Image (cartoon, rainbow, N blue to C red; front, side, top):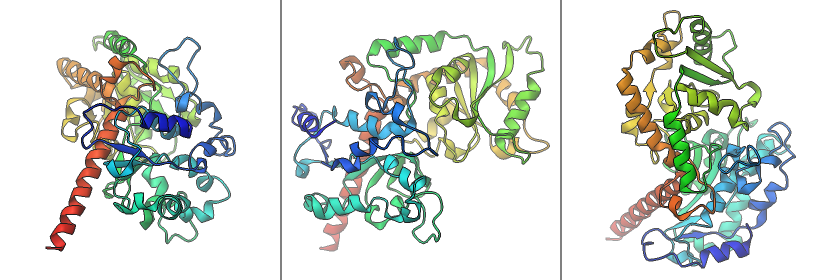
Length: 434
């Protein structure tokens, strides 16, 4: 992914349908992206991510003959996005013609030295070198034209990891990138957003499924539809072993209790299936959890350290109906990809407060109470969303490119938000001069 490749992509003929969609890729020194990949083994606390850099961030194939499945690490979304941007059909080398400016900055990777390395006590400096480059070193007129309002970037971690208050002394876990006034105008696409900042927008976690043509996508969807759902519900995850009441503990206790119940006459072989993903053993091994998800009717998505989970999107790819326990786990997050008002059509919500406690609601009873015809309708809605939440492989076929995937929808959303913001600013400026 060198400068020559980027220029070649930008010089391609985008066709006539680019009104309001032109994007300029800002040329950044390799210290802000490619050089960060050379340090992939230097953060032992976070784990060596060198094996996951390959295939432009998709990681290694799950097995040699695989055509669509990879051992993808969510942190690599910045690489995946950068590679896909080079194929975007409406690139322009002229920033003055662009509706938006893409910053190919690997913010999540650069943050590792602040999160786990010796620079933690200077985490308030995260991004300031980039800001100086954008505003002083290299063509500052690009930034000054809109004061950064037309810029966007991908940050492949939850926004909380970039939201350490500048006043914290001593600093706590995280960096202050999103708290820095220098970047208040920039649209940040994160894996999980906070509830209040307008400039943050959550986009789907990358799963391990990256089809390269329409045939592979259709073949997988056919398999999802054909699979017999022999388990009522499944939880794939870790935690829940502490004595303190919490939603994961309640789920594991219920799962242990209902496994001894006879499922005869219920239409299921068992009521609950549990895939222990403690210590991150499932993270890069989709075979470990995808097969059980294919066999389950509902997949439980309790919050962990933060409200969202990559497992939500793994489950959707498997056609397993998500069960949420916090609205911040998805409904208030991925509004570009899944309309907030439609969540009830393809997922189940059970408030965690109703489950945790001595007289808590039993999840199994709630799920068994949903009519089978309704379950089938919900699953079809989940299946219909698969193509919107996966990131297809770079260089994919024209047939697959005719369908909007998670990347396409994220770029479209960023353009709409930036255009709206710029128009507001221009209207306000015009009004103030009247």
